[in-house]
Image (cartoon, rainbow, N blue to C red; front, side, top):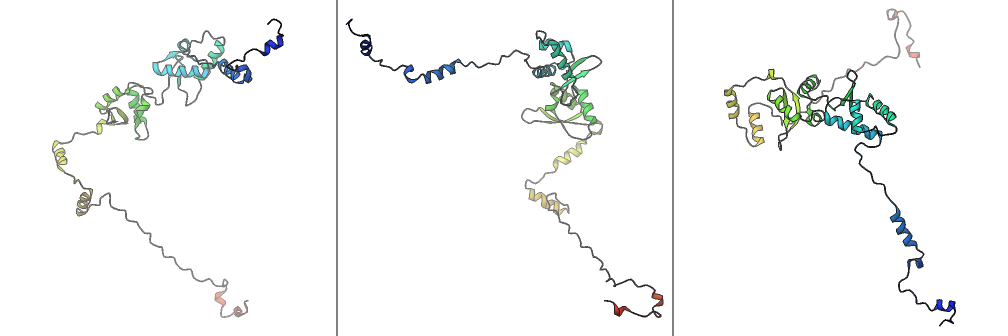
Length: 267
């Protein structure tokens, strides 16, 4: 067999039972390799964030949880910015953001003590603040307890104590008896009611059928609130007819018997 040519030996080799990927051009294999080679970056939770606006967000959340005045150094220590290469620049940018005069800014600054604290939606942090805020309101609109929790997280207990002192009026949820809305109340306007009057009031039984109640009111010459409104028709005002105006203004009427009448010559 040694005398066989190399070319003829290559022709006698058995074909591969399974076609290789190289015979198909390698298109599918290349796409799979490319898909496996792509590495997607995964976000890492560093605790402070890398962007300055993220740092501001972390600061606001930290101040809201603390609910007390903090110095600038305490805030910077919490953010852990000392290891950054642009520490001084980032520090000045954060200070400018903290001092920004914007109604939406949730950071309050005290120039005397040079400290910062969280600025809630409603300037209420305790019972005295709530009482003062409600007294200064120009309207009798209720205050949502959900907004109170932003600056006074433990407001439920304080609201209950104020309600017992009759300093506020409270609307509570039926399912858990939690306060939902509060209003200002003046205890000096609340007078005790006689027991006899209470008993007489409770003796009055209202009919179960609303139509019966309406008929009783009508019999007592009282107008029920469910009565239809009477449309008032406006009376048409009588307009005075204007007298027909003559063709021209007459003058020298005192000389009518002397002057000659030329009115028949008018065109």
